[in-house]
Length: 362
Ligand SMILES: Cc1ncc(COP(=O)(O)O)c(C=O)c1O
Image (cartoon, rainbow, N blue to C red; front, side):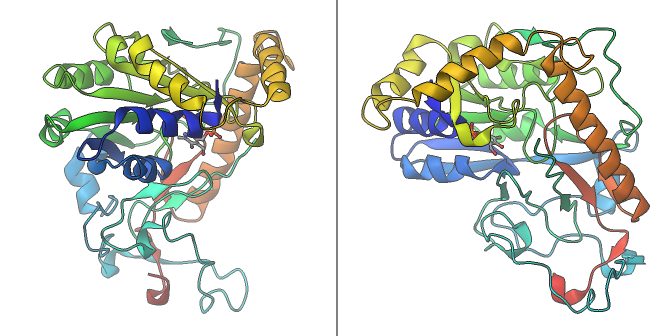
C-alpha cells in the first residue's frame, strides 16, 4: 500500500535508480516521473510518442504540424502561420488582447525552457499552442487483460469515438534510446496526457525490444486502468509472460473513484522489485492512513456490484467519462479544432493549426 501512486513511484525510483542510471520516459509524460527519477540521481532519457494519421501515416501529422516539442528542442513548433486559418472566438471584447492565464512552467510546454521535458500534471497537459495542443478535459469526476465490470449490456456512447488520429510509439526509436545504463522504463496507459491505450500487440513489441536489456525494470503506471473507452481492453504489461518478472504495476483509487485526496495507491510485482518499496516505506511514511485504506477496501468490493443501471460502478464511471468526452470533442470540433480523441483516461488533446493564435500568446 502506498500514499497514492505518487509515493509508490517515488519509492520505486529511490530503490531502483542509482546515480548514473538512466530512466526512460515516453514523451509527453506525467510530470512527476522526471523529477522523481532526478531525485534518485537518475538521468532522464525521452522517447517520443508520435501523432499518426490512421490512413495517411505520420507524414500527414508532420505536414499539419501535429507534434509536441521534444526535450532539448526549440519551442518553434506548430503549423506555419499561413495555415492558421481561423481566428479564436472572441467571447468578450478583451479576449484577443488578454493573454491566457499563466500556466505552471513545468507543465506548459510552450513556456518551459528548451531543456525541460514535455511533461504534464494532473490538471494540465503539455502542448504548445499551434501544435497538437491540449484541452484538458478536467472531467474530474488486477493483473491480466481485464475489462472489469464490462458487460454486453453496457452501451457506451461511441458517437465521439471516430477519429483519424492516433498516438504511436516506434519500437525502433525505443530501442535506440535503451542502453546498458537504462534501469527503468516508465509505461503509463491509459496515458496522461494523450489518452493513448497500448494494445497487446504494441506491448508485445515493447517486450521484444526489452529482451536485449535485462537490467531494465518496467514501472507501469495504470491509475486510469478502468477508464478505457469504445470497447477497448486495458492490457496490463505484467500480464505478458516475458514482462512479468521485470514489471511493477502501480495503481490507485484516486482516478477511478474520484478521490485523489485520499491518497490510497498500491503496487504489485515480483518480490525482488516490490521489496524496495516495502523497505523504504518503513522510513518514509511509516504507514498509509488506516481509515481511507479501510474505506477503499470496502469500495473495491462494492464497485463490482450493479450500480445506477450499470453492471458495475466501473461500467458507470466509464460511461460518465465517455459522455464528457463526447461533449468536449463536439465542442472542440464546433470551435474549429481537430481533437485527437482519447482511447482512455482524463484528457483530450487537439490540433490547433486551424486557429489563428495571437502572436502574443505564443
Ligand atoms: C498518470 C498518473 N499517475 C499517477 C498520478 C497520481 O496518482 P495518486 O493521486 O494516486 O498519487 C496521476 C495524477 O494525476 C497521474 O495522472
